[in-house]
Image (cartoon, rainbow, N blue to C red):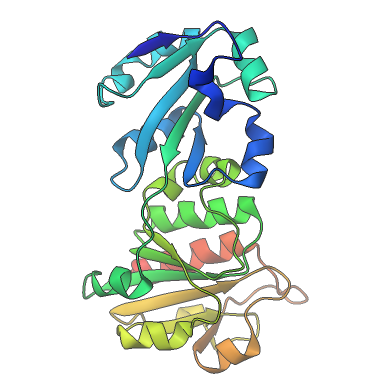
Amino acid sequence: MIVPIDDPADDRIAAYRDVRERDLVGREGLFIAEGEVVLRCLIRSERCETLSLLLLDRQAERLAPMLADLPPEVPVHVANQAVMDAVVGFPIHRGILALGLRPVQVAPDALLVGLPPRAVVMCLFGIANHDNMGGLLRNAAAFGVDAVLLDSNCCDPLYRKAIRVSVGAALLTPFVRLTPGTDVVELLERHGFQPLALSPSGERTLSETTRPDRVAVLLGAEGPGLSPELMARAKTVRIPMAGGFDSLNVSTTGGIVLHHLTSQ
């Protein structure tokens, strides 16, 4: 349903107005997806619903084969460069935006109980950087992680930048946010998952770690890492590094660990 837009004040594209500022204050159950690869993931996502698109006029014709997969009631708003820049509040060179509806939040128990007998879960604690969040979700999709658990201090996986860095994986991988005070280890063990806590001071190396059928990878923010209380109740694992250096980007760490576990 192609809808030409020639007025930046048109109420039909109000959700796209001042994108950066509105991203910072939240979108009340909605999110903005940006770019061709991300749009492709959104259209095929079984978790998120596509509500509308806003495209540069030159992109609409090029993306016609992809747009054919949209439900017929989804409006595709088309504007020239000047109008689109005025709407979003900055020069948008890709010229591809979509408005999506967040998936319904499920209970952590409901998510875990539905996973297969052999499964990998990634648990994130205090990941406040959207680049790291996007990278971790990209790794999760690349290595077939079945679900992601986020503690209450993690940033939003459906923030526009996090979605973009994840190349759309944030729209495909099931995740759930835990309420403050959730006993994560008890939750995981109740569903048969063995928690592996990553730390430079881990009691064994990653190469010495054999994957159980149900395993949960626990990753903390760069700097503070995981709490001592959490590590005391999990099996701690380290990645050996050259002498005098003991730190990896958390997304890099996640990729190495997930590759090791899923290749067994």
